[in-house]
Image (cartoon, rainbow, N blue to C red):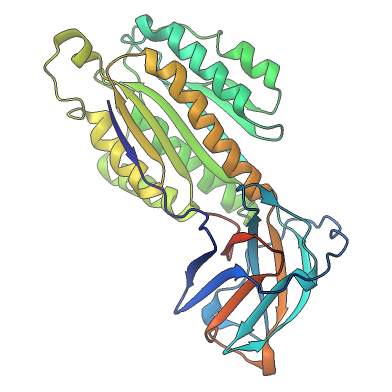
Length: 339
């Protein structure tokens, strides 16, 4: 079994830095905690904040905060978030909720090599669904004979649990690459319609290494990779090596699914795991469900902070520092609420 983990960022112990253009923003615990304020009223999702390269006198950023146990903390008041440039304090004008929930698409290879593993598929998928908190929207697809929905965009856990038992193996080749390309195209179309980045897309694929059918050419696949990176989606893939199971000789990552899957998982900060025994699927998928649940909880508890920059500064940020005034807190800052 080989595992590839590609995590772009994680909560630090006491402080975390994020590059914003030419500047670096530091989130740290402030030395003296401030009195808490009442939680802000929920606000409508807003467009992503402006690029720090072309700032006016006001600046917006998105912050997610966690306590010492890594649990997300929401409802911070204006006095609990501090920002400065060149050591000069900025005025915190407003703090409002900025939820960016996970949208999870699960794609299952139900092609000719899936039959023996089906019970482990179902057990793992059920554990994954149970690990997700309420509010995570899930689409379940099968990839043979083409990507098609078993359940579309549902938050109904019971419906999803029934759905993991509603597909069967097919004799036709799965379409692993097509599924990735169509996932990317779906989110491009959505953004073109809404002009909003109001979700964190995750594609979780359960695949075998059986020869796949492909409808897309290399330029379209390359474009899809770029779209996924631009949209800040994440791709998780577990690949069951049917060749290794039957012959005991084939290299576990010497197949088309690995040649496509490893790079896309790396590009998106996701995960790729090759396995030779399908029993691992039953435990791995619930583990990934817990990771996805944590991502969702962090991103739905984010806050949008509006700042009046010190001294009527404009243009790029100048040695910015962002601090959380509650004791024991750590956090992450972004411009769009995405990882």
